[in-house]
Image (cartoon, rainbow, N blue to C red; front, top):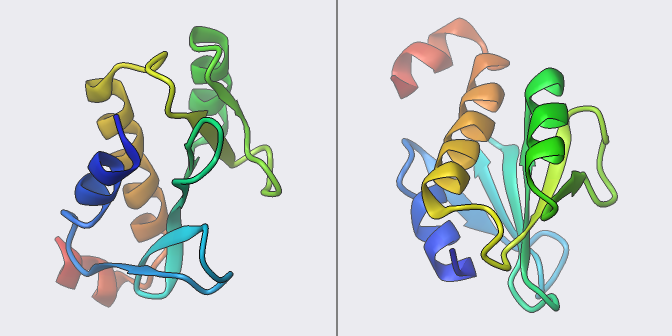
Length: 116
């Protein structure tokens, strides 16, 4: 997937927004003010960091060379994925959805119900 395809996927979720709180060069995708994806579109190669349940994160790191512990993030709960083609698009879409759902699961019940 390209950074543009990752962006389109991330923005397809309810109430998802993109911001640049760290300045240009890092696109931050949030739901209800909580980050679920960070995209570095100008990296060599570009990458996306996604929240992940710890056991699933470990599994994905074992399956794909492009999946590593989160860069400058909690390495237990975040993975960084190089957008170099190693991870198939359908798997990456699933990882983005999982990240969004992990964040939504931590929101208050009333907010979760509104987002479903």
